[in-house]
Length: 114
Ligand code: AMP
Image (cartoon, rainbow, N blue to C red; front, side):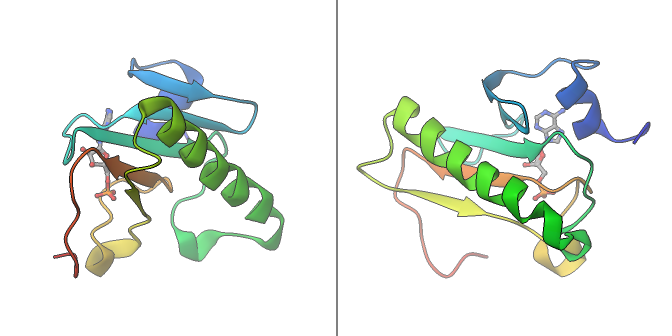
């Protein structure tokens, strides 16, 4: 997608602080971190929202979760714990329409989320 900021990060057209990359997904630090560790894991494939997932995309979503696990280990937050979040559409708080898994850690999380 030409006008998608996360596609441009995945292709290297705009810079990001990339902490993880494999053939299907990229992980990079959020520009406006909400926790000491705040990484976004995105698929290289453009998928606008969770509502747009196709059955064949399930492997990609599994890869995103696996990448979040790997990053949590590398960041040293795995044992203490962390939160993973997908926001979907307006009421879910989604502002960038290329799916992304937030990985948040390094502080206690509260529940329910706002
Ligand atoms: P969401 O509100 O779930 O759509 O999350 C979008 C996230 O993307 C927000 O936490 C933003 O701070 C983050 N974000 C937007 N643009 C960039 C960027 N260029 N690099 C890193 N993070 C970004």
